[in-house]
Length: 253
View 1 (cartoon, rainbow, N blue to C red):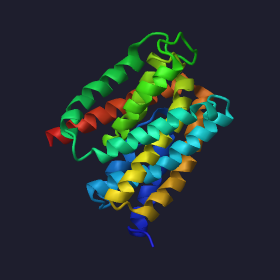
View 2 (cartoon, one colour):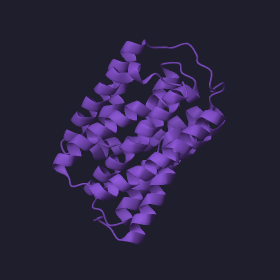
View 3 (tube, rainbow, N blue to C red):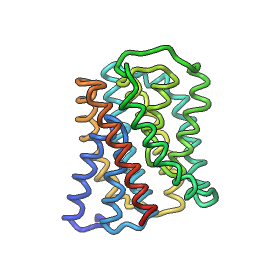
């Protein structure tokens, strides 16, 4: 029934649960699940496609949990989510035609910059600030740009959404986290729509991991809403730094 043996499936479910917690707090859950899928024997493209399948469930649960907590109005995010869905499809379709290796060279620098921004910038808390860009312009520029990247490559998309919401939209850290989740859900869904045609995801494994992601995302969202920026900032800094180190190690290897 499943594409892997029982003991490997258990490992994947544990990884998905932990990733769901991390992803719902600050993003970066793929840092956990993608390498585990590769270790489980999935070819790289299959691992990426399966990671999109399982990740969409965690992002969806996190979006619902934050909405129920009053931190985001999902109905107001529908059009940005549609834009994210379409941009992710375009990015995924162009994966084989654009110089993704060149883009990956700059990713560690960007991720370390994001980590330093959240670690060192004074006054970053859960209080909203003055916005630097109108919501409509944000939806037409930042959202599709990050979603395109999410479909094209993927790692760190949540951190880029966060940077946009905090640095440009003026959101507090908790509110910014809440607003990334539906967009993450939409861009993951766009990636699935494309990879389902050009790759062969492990559907049963992906759905099982998705169930574990739902549980992890619920736990992580509850923790983030209870503790706020005091939890989100260190998790985001750690995830962004770890992802940058992993990318540098892959290039060096």
